[in-house]
Structures are given as C-alpha cells and as structure tokens.
Amino acid sequence: MDFGKAIRKDFPIYGRYAGTGLFCYLDSAATSLKPRVVIDAVKEYYEAYSTNVHRAAYSLAERATEEYEGVRAMVAQLIHAPRADEIIFTRNTTESFNMLARTYAEHFIKTGEGILLTEMEHHGNLIPWQELARRKGITLHFIPIDSATGALVWDAATFGTFLKERNIKLISLTHVSNVLGTINPIAKIAAIAHEAGVIVAVDGAQSAPHLPINVQDLGADFFAFSSHKMLGPTGIGILWGRYELLEKMPVFMVGGHMIDDVMSTRATYRAPPLKFEAGTPNIAGTIGFGAAVKYLMDLGMDNVRDHEKMLLTAARHRLADIPGISFLGPMDAEDRSGVLAFTLAGVHPHDIGSLCNEAGVMIRVGDHCARPLHKKLGIPASCRASFSVYNDMDDIELFADVLKTVQKKLSAIPVSLSHDAVSAGNN
Ligand SMILES: Cc1ncc(COP(=O)(O)O)c(C=O)c1O
Image (cartoon, rainbow, N blue to C red):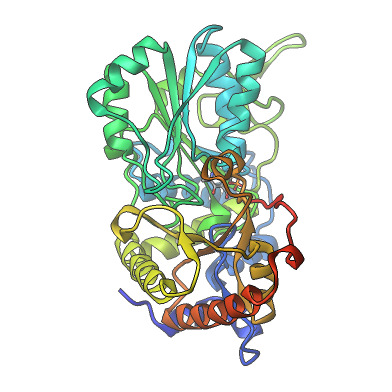
C-alpha cells in the first residue's frame, strides 16, 4: 500500500517547508506530524464552543460535552474495546502507567509479590514500577531479550510455572519496542498469564499508531497509548482497562469533576471512567485526538500497517550495503513495526544525527528512553528512523543517500576525534 504524495496535502507542515529540500521527517516514534483536520478541530473548539464539559446548563457546553464524550466512543471503536466507559483520558502513556501503578498495583499487589516486565521497556513503563517496587517491597522480574534477534526469550511450555514460582501478579510489557521495533506475542503471553491468575498491562505507545488493535484479541487487561504519536495533539493519552477492574481500582488524582457527593470530611466518587479524571480535562486535545482517530480509521489501520511495512522493507534494503551498519531488532518486516534503529561502526550516533540534520533528514539519536535495553545491547546510543503515513519512497531514497555520504565523511575522521558523549536522549 502506498498512500502517495497526495496525503501530504493533509499535513500543513509539508507546505511550510515545500521547496526547501530540508524536510524529511523520520522521527514519528517520538511524535507525529498533525493533519489539518486535527488542527482545525482544536481551532474550532477554541473559536466556536470553548466551554467546559459535564456541566451543561447551556447549549455550547452541551456541544463540548458531546464532542468530548464522542471521542471516548471513537477510541473504543479503534481498539475494539467492549465499552466506551472503559476509556480513561490521561496526559500520555507515561501518566497511564503511573495511574496504574499508583492505583491498581498499589492496592492489589502485596509486599513480597512480583511484577514481570521485559528488558525492552521504555522508561515510561519501567520507572513507575521501580518506584512502586521500592515503596512496597515488590520484586521486579524481567523477560530477557535475544540481542541478535530482538525477540523476547520465553518458553510457552514453562511460562505458567515460572509465573507461579516467582509469585508474579502483574505483567506489564510493550506491544512494540520503540528501539527494536519487535512486535511482542501479547496474545500468547496473556493467555498463559490469565490461566495463572496474572493481570496483563500492555504499552501500546508504539503499536496503536501503526497496527490494527483489538484489545480483546490481545487478551490485555489494560492498554495504554498516546495521542501525539498517532497524529493527534500532545497532552492527551489513554488508559483502557476492563470495566470490572476499573470499578475495583482506587482513585488516582482527586478533586472536582470526579466526585459523586462531598461531605466536609469525605467524598464519594463517580463511576469509571470519570472517577479517574479529576479537574477540567484537556478538552481541546481530546477533541483533536478524535479527529486524528477518525483520520486513521478512514485510512484504515490495515492500510497503515501495509504502507509502513513497505517503507521498513525498502529502508532496510537500501541501507544494507552501508559499510559498518548494524540493524537492531528482527530482520523480517512481518515481525516488526514503525522503527528502524541502527549503529554505524566507529561513528557516534550524535554525529550522524547532526550531519543528517544538515541535509534536512530528521532522525532520533540517543537511547530513546530505553537505557537498560541499550546497556544490554552493549551500546551507549543508537540512531533511529521511524515512519508514519506521510512518509514515502522518496524519503527512503534521500535518507539512504544522505546516510551513505555521512558514513563516508565520518569514517574518514579518526574515532578519537569524533563526538563521544554518551547520549541522554529521550523518547
Ligand atoms: C514504547 C513507549 N512507551 C511509552 C512511551 C512514553 O510515551 P509518552 O512520552 O507519550 O508518555 C513511549 C514514547 O516514546 C514509547 O515509545
């Protein structure tokens, strides 16, 4: 599937840089570009009905509430959640995991019990669990990865016993690695976890923008992702959870909007999802996200996946003969999504990033907020190109040409003179 150049008319930022030859955006895993429909939806809210939600005594506020709540239904449709009231609006994936750690896990996981993560987690799905473990005396365990293939090393035959022996109560793992691109076998892991009575939380930050998602088929109990990585505004994220779990979960932030009744010394709270949404929410961001979800659903998530698979395959093929290049993660585009990370022997990723930038090619360099994974791979940093619906074969050609020139230039410089700061990178 090739969306073609026509799609770029939908993204005003391409118009801004048209003719400069300096706009090859390959960093959508950090954040995506925004289509006109998203910008217009946000503008329309501010210009035409910028009122609060859930307090409608007049028609403009009624419209705001309808639009805001309508997004919940669209997101539920996108990820095939059974109910719209299972969709909680947060700020981003990171906040979704903080909420989960502070509410469900804090309440239901006891001292001495275990939580299972993987070695490929983004800090957003690692640090909240580290803090919880420290506070409550919970042990963190990690499914290892195979550095060569980028796959999780786990054995379906013994996994149930492993979970019981380690007293694991919750698995929290990424659907797609933001460095390796690996698509993890969530459904298989979740099926065994559920037999062992273990809850499964999935980090969908890098899968929801790129793959058709069905949380029921995945067997997830919780699923978290961010609007800004899937064509929507910043400052809005999702935590989906099975309704019976959300009902049991204690509240997170407290205050206005989320209360049922308030006495002077105590309060009762609304039903999910509102009990998790204290204070005035990000109304404009949510409405903009609704426009992004509709845009993606109109394109068709199967088509999005096919388009990106084509780009990944082409990029890997075009870069393969660059001297010293090593790709991270699985070989086959079938097993990976969205990102293509790599190192060049003897050349620091930061130098590559700077020279690419001079040629208008925007890639990410650093540890991409996955420092333990880079330590496991024995590298301080890597380069990462990542794709979305607006990228095309011209981007791949330009990127490959620029990278070839950069490699020639930098390999002529003795390593001792090249940039050797260890990255602090992010996202
Ligand atoms: C796999 C993964 N998880 C979590 C996050 C955190 O997302 P956010 O910064 O939107 O909270 C990211 C961001 O890059 C990510 O790639």
